[in-house]
Image 1 (cartoon, one colour):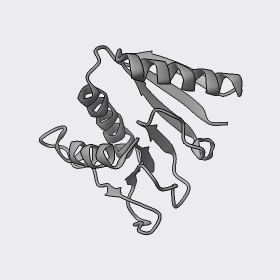
Image 2 (image 1 turned 135 degrees about the vertical axis):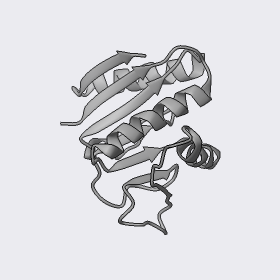
Image 3 (image 1 turned 120 degrees about the horizontal axis):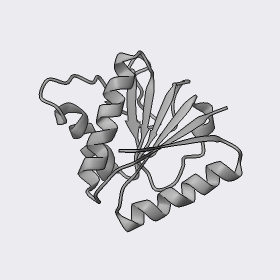
Length: 142
């Protein structure tokens, strides 16, 4: 069954939330995981693409933005707001306000919540959704 991890961050800065997600992706990538990043919008997809290239000066995280028409089957990290994962992958990074319909095909889902009232409220809704369906939940306060 899919394991759901919530990361609760201090502050309400969206950029800090995305940088933390980049750090988690970097760690998972070096552990050999296949990662799918689900974003809220095209704007967030493009911003996250830039963040993966620049969140740390010495970092290299190979990734690709995908839609339903183009996918690189060999890229270990895929980022999209409107595509479904083209293959089985280990880790779903959810940066959207709702859980995607395909979340249960992953071994693990990472959710990120901060003190922004909109993000916090959406995070609580997702937490209840997973909890009511019997998923294993864990919370990390960062």
